[in-house]
Image 1: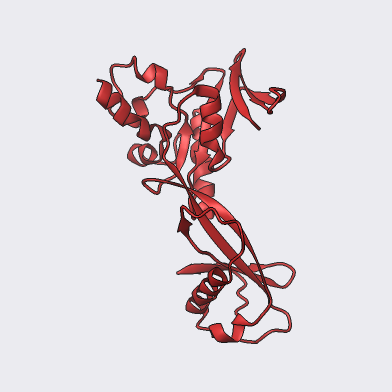
Image 2: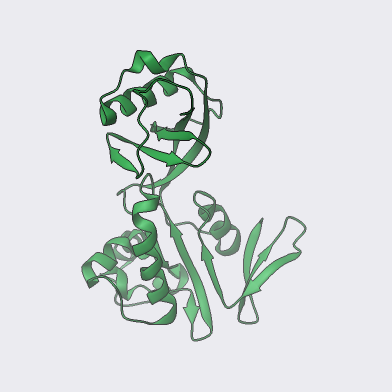
Length: 235
């Protein structure tokens, strides 16, 4: 995906040769940090302060290793998390490092994950540190206020012409009766926590169904909240 555009009432996703990959009345930008790039390519301005936060997770095989290695049947979270995996492996982590673009797995980060695992299970880091391990590095999309962006994308051109936008719910949107442009990103390290409720909220935006949240909570997650300073400075 290289760019998006509105054409004949449909939202199009195009590749680098501007060939249409897909088109539909409704488009949801749910591609993490890439949402800003696609929005800028289609509309020319990005209102969201998204930051990339590096995270490394670790994985250990549970078969044939020390009995002290925890093997929970359900996810456990606190100062870190541990997830049981199929195939006899344990997944745990994770680190959090803003402004770090290093894609390589790091032993120091694995040891930090082991310390978090020990904190959750009461186990012995030293007993696990020599075990062969695997891992993965990724980047979380984090907003400046640590809350997700879930809802209809604001129409900044229309915002400049409106007389009232003192709350996010009054900000004009890039949508009409046929469809619209929406975003679901900025979940940070709480993607699993936000996913179900965020999905219901997004569905209510798109379908017009009753909102699952009170108005002030919906406003707190509304992507238009970052457009309000622009309106206030121009009004």
